[in-house]
Length: 586
Image (tube, rainbow, N blue to C red; front, side):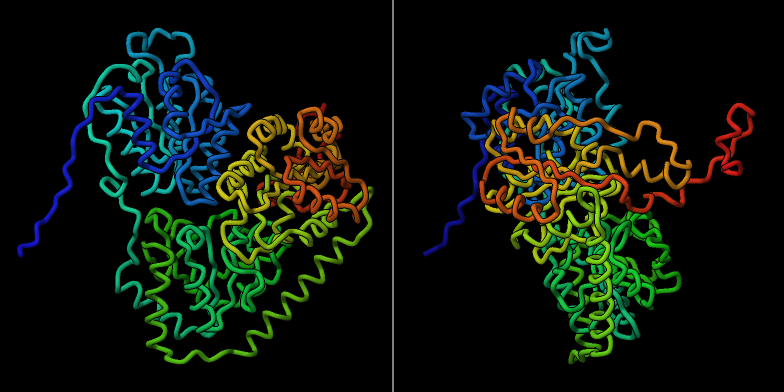
């Protein structure tokens, strides 16, 4: 009997452009969209409930893209945001720029002014494509209503391929009409799997590592995104190579592993820094080795100047962008790690555990942990911020996702946060915008409903994001906001302490009672004034499974070092009027 080959028959469907957009989103597995409703896309919005897509209305469009950034970093799936043309879309500039620097796939559905009125400076008209060109991987403009599905597929293809946000710009009148087109499956227009790099570069990398006297691994976001931690562990164990994690990616290697030394970068781990200084070969996996993430810290210039660097990155633009390398591998972090491991095992058939190196790692970590606790136990009024972080991290369940903002306390958290599972640390990273952590936590909770989600935020950043407590209550998203309230923009205040002789301009903040504000919005609000109450308050908030705000009162005089000590100078003044402000006259 002859086997009959059955071919899939594709048929064009008659649809409206709105239907074509929504059906493409359904095929992409999109289950929710974040934004604020607007007349520009109301025809599409009307279809979402019937399509099974939840619309999450935020209070400010900036929060929408932060939410989807968090959702993607936890789920691995591209997030989708939408807003009214003009101000609704431009409100997303900061959060889309943040996602772009964080390499987070995202599609920004950007309704724009209708084609009959373009160029007349009509109501809410803006050239959104020009605004977003520099902060997205691509801006895809719909040129005809019949192209909407094709252009949206292109947006998703580029977002995943280049790891970042893509603007899908569609004139508001293009949601209406009729078209005939296919609704394709994602595998028909984009590829999810990536290669491992060239055999020659993999061979050279393995040879360097096999001959190294003191190899050190830096594991980054690419390791997390590719689910490649097991492969990194195997390489580390075979070579007895200590493993640091890149700046604010503390979940890129399990902290409880004997070879883990912690994070590098601002307020990272001294154990990681002293270890990295010794390296003769550095294997940087899934990290661009950003300038800010490798700057000296604690007056330790730790990034090795003479080590041979092997850098693995999916994006060829990142290879050797910031540090000279010996070997560059353009490939998926996990696939490249697998191939390197195979080759190392050929060079060194049997792993030989280096007990001296293990002992060194253990001692460095023990010393650093002791220092962290001692710093935290210094009395504060009312609470030493470090003590607050220490007590918080002690009680977090193993599967907790933690989002961190930017600022004095949020950045100090880099030293205290430890994770044994991946996709648990979501940080503002090098774009460094305040107001990031809370909306991002909401998105992370949507991606992983069974994981506790805690946001670490300073009071300044909280002022930029507390409005989303209403979203959490309305959408029943039980995230815990830990607001470290020190009454000031303390990261900048530290600069005024060190460089401007304690002259404070714009640093101090007069805050309301954040716990009371939270309660008025329908959430649980708790004021915490004693260090011993931090842990129990966090646990109770997690167990309540309700949106909760902890207003943690911390000392505003116990400050971390300046973020950019390298970029600041003591002030000189030339006009007599300002002579008293010159550092030479202090």
